[in-house]
Length: 417
Image (cartoon, rainbow, N blue to C red; front, side):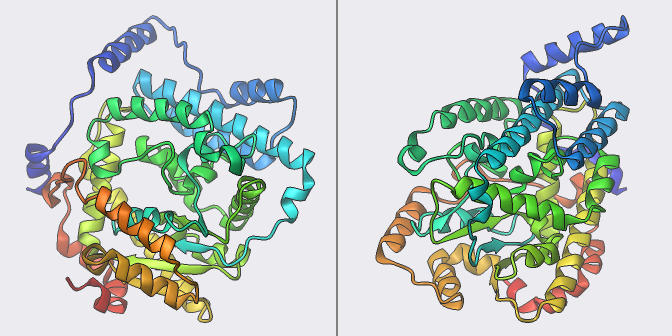
């Protein structure tokens, strides 16, 4: 019954005409045995190494084989999806090569300190973007912005940070994305100069959930979620050192839902990290995240199975939450701040003051005024209202609640509306 209702209620955005025509042309070429888009890992790796004149980290070679091998075996990627993945992997491999070369040329980068970073490690769709962008208004906070994670080399400089030409280039890429996935801005608006999730840094090593938002690659997902994440967070730290080399601030403020899975490795690599967790009803979280993934995958896949996406979100987010609960129990001395999603939305500045007090950090008048101005200019639902139902994804809310019962019992006080 739920599957039938999901079919009847599925909300699919129309694929833009140019993309449909490109995909049709790609299918025609494939029928005649021609495939102009290569997803061959060895070919892409060789091309990047030749252009860069350097070897890549062996772990990145393996990640490329896992990612592209999974994509080659998928029968569901459109021609445009294959073009997108091929070009993206080539760009990210180029980023990796550039990072390697920069670190080799400037070894002092790796000797920089990163003191008491703040990690927003929470379920997606629980107010983390609002909080991250609000905290970014404090001049003492350094946040990774979309453009510098997409184009990290050469390292950004304080004097030209606000007008770096890479902002315009990345802005063009985002404009294309918004045309391909028209509903994406309603769910999660991104901008070249906006703070963004640091899973984008993981993408420069080809080990990131970032690739899975738009592409259904279960083999790669299984491989990724069973990796030792400590080396990945060491690479994360190296990239932060590179980004702050010529422009640093008092502290880094970082966020990504995948940090729930990596909470233990984070505290291994950043032992003085301070953790912020927002809490929201898991049913709303799973549904909202499923809607985001579906919206993105419609741009790159022929057939998008909403029910399968619902199961995927429930499984992965449930596993991430279990991992985070275990890590919290194993690190009782770590500073955690827990916030209710509803309280955050109702009074964002009260939540901010609570964080600064808990972490013994001064909140300046300048930061407060900038945050208040940001709130006035960025009202909720600025780009439209995000709507979804359990039926669309074949989800039984009671089943979600049972899966998250440990989480809900532990943080019941933060989940009440």
